[in-house]
Length: 133
Length: 282
Length: 131
Image (cartoon, rainbow over all chains, first blue to last red; front, side):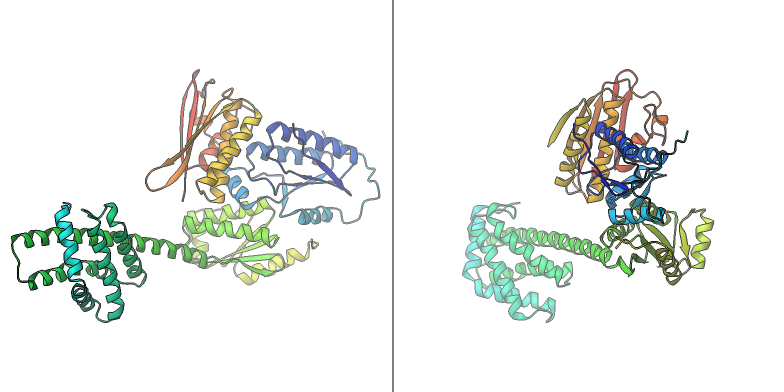
């Protein structure tokens, strides 16, 4: 089974989905990301979906779940690069992805995350993830 | 009622034997219909070509217009209709160019002085063939006009939906005229694509030029706003005239948390304020 | 033209998406219509797998004289749908999804027919026409 790579850039985890994901691959990504957020202590996740030519309800739900999980782990998720045709289709499908923050591209997504934390983090980012129940 | 091979060969002989005179007569009749809107030389060239087309079809023994031997003639006829349609001539004027052949033929048969029952039967058969050719011309004419109309509709669609960059990170689409489903879809796609291309997080949809807003138009605008949000861009609607505001409320259309401004200038001011509050990505 | 694929696993759902996309491009659907059709096919193929316990997906090129289009038939021999109206309601789900599969897919295509019998299976036919 293919796996979607998760890259760490500074305080941000960058995921660029380049393949037509099987449902299992999407679920695996969800797990991998949760592990990596905890392991790296990153506070931001950017998921680039500019290569996806469709987002169906399963992928949409997975993105929403990832956003919720990372929020619990004190990381903010931004989904970037959604294609116009995909957005139009999602609106028609009735999927508005509430709770997911979006930006037009990776650059704007990073700017959005940077804005969340005006003062730079101390090097290493040693904070414990906040456990909310 | 197809032409027999005898009739076809007699028709071919007639066309061949009197080719110059026939073309001359034919051109004259057509020219009187066009009253100088096409030059005589131009018409003579066209009629000459058509005559050679008819002749080739008859030489090939074509009994009917859809026979293989009539292939060249069909090509000529549809070329003629295309030219006429594009030059703005009416369907009538186009068909007359072909029908006139009958009159020209009659003139020649009459002038030969040896008209008998066979000549008459032949003439009826030739006429029937020419009629079919004229109808074919008519059909191609209509088809060309339909293509023209749909091309123009498409061009209109393109023309009437410009998306302009208004400011750094701000694009605007001034909607003008009635928004039907097809146009709304084009506007929607174009706007969203421009957001990506210019990486602009803000879009202003200006509806000053939209004469009326009904639930359907509102639906399209709302869907565009939601789609833009999914992509990470915010839309502002501007140019809502007083009557339109009243209709919107009367129809119970909910714009929810979508920002609306009275004028494009207000919308731009609003966006620039929002934009300056955010760090630049570039 | 007609293509039939068996849907028995996750990979098959991906294959359905790819085949539908190829067919949609060949039929010259607009980009948005391609996306809508592939998304609908993805939803319905997953339904066939998850609720129908697997089945087949058939792609057919259609032409009604005026327009060309693509028809896709999703068939399974699963438990069928007991309450169709309910199943077509936004947000209704028995499978833990978002409940947008059926109702959403119906909005993404031009024609949507569903034929189901409890205990015998479900067959869903969707068609998308070129504009």
